[in-house]
Image 1 (cartoon, chains in turn red, yellow):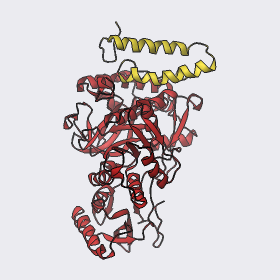
Image 2 (image 1 turned 45 degrees about the vertical axis):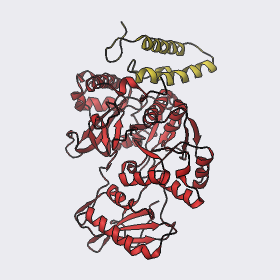
Image 3 (image 1 turned 60 degrees about the vertical axis):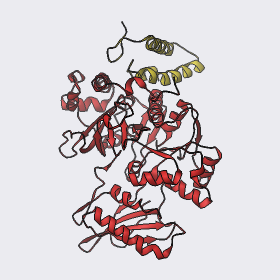
Length: 453
Length: 66
């Protein structure tokens, strides 16, 4: 029965919508009671909003609950260091602490987890890994540094829970990781999308063809690129394997969504453990299915730090589960995480999204790495795409590639003129975790250019 | 009659899962030597996922140090 089950949890993954919402409401009431009774922050927040748990008679009452922002969490950490007043207990009740990645340059959030919370974090990854076809007979390679950033820690334990032979690929060079993937005969590799491409580049440099390897699945997380069709296609082509997107966040502790084997062009929300809303980020009114909105997440899993109506700043487009024929009743985020509410840049009146640029760059297979720099020259904003090409790139083909990039970028951006420059091989930063390729230097004095690290 | 979080009657297997869960919780309340104290809690932490994910029980176990 186990190996043949298409679903990790057949009972809830196929619940009719009405029953699923009944389950969510039952959990929501208990979660709010728990938070109200145990968390100083929620007690004050609920009281200030005039909310009590007994007001929850249907999921429509969800909107009575005040929203939580990252700024709220940060402010609480600063006022009551080191963990703030969201947790329902102190570190003596916890077994782990993890932090956000810090790629935004802000002070990291610190998240405490109990034994049960940590087992639940692995459980969510097990939903995702099983959903994309991982089974106990697989061998997985987790290409991750195993540091204080939570990253793929949960996947590691989720794989063990399933019964997979797990190879932890921490604290190693990319070359060693490539060799271990081949030596151990890994059938599943987990990494960020950027690092999956980096591993493929390294394999080629070493003279290995990953298409001949045992790898059949890549589990991607940590960046929106796992659902950018062009990036995903490039990863699948270079590895000769299927790539499956997942997405989560440290604030939740684990993944919230996963792409199933049917690959419907998006990721299923794990709706028996999360209650997700999609709101207009300006008006905070719900948006309809098929429209873009900001993800607001309520997690039923973490007991130590209740997460109720947390504004994620992730942009998503929610569509009904029926877009996928896998049989799950969990709704789908079409295209995964579409970007961040705050990552759009305005350049000479044109909206520029990093995701759209990456989608174009990845159609040019000769480009190994890239960076976007937005600068102000006098009164005029300029946007420059800097590309790093494969070492064997034919220099005579450069002008054709450059013109093709400029054409495609302009067509996708209302005619906006991009400069396209070439960087020396190896000069642009490489990323193992979350890539940061867009540098908005308009407030930086001329001549001061960082490399993005 | 025991029901799940949806109000449905428990199946035989579900009732057995909940019964073992309650037994583990009961053990956590006992005065156990470190070897049992720690391993019962570790077991319950993982086990709780089965009954919670199947919609049978939903609670946080922090008061049991789990």
